[in-house]
Image (cartoon, rainbow, N blue to C red; front, side, top):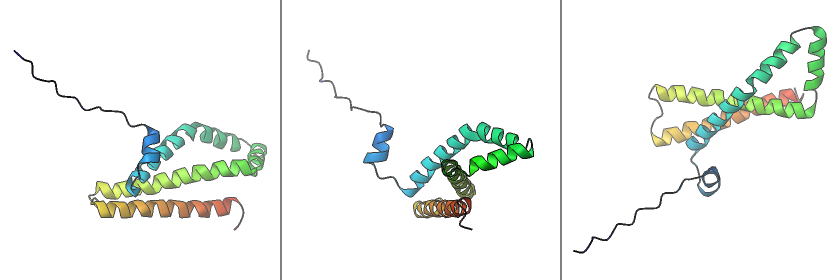
Length: 137
């Protein structure tokens, strides 16, 4: 008897993060989702440090003046601007998710539109925070 030829199994490969970021064009909703996760993770990691700085700045007037001087450094302002973007993006994307939980903007076109609005609003608010942080107004 002759055996039936074996079917070739499809080759399944894992998709790495570099494949996702360089080879595929992501729609705005995917970009917002990825940035929402990254901003949440960053805020989670830096929360103990931020709370420590808050605790130390509230300890006395001298420690407050010391931390006020630290914040005058341009490098620290850039870090604070990054943290501000993370918070503002996470907040606006969270509001978008609350609308989606209430079955609003679930179709593809509306989802892409709200994702674009999240990106625009979070960046606009970050620019306002940056202008205030760097002393424009």
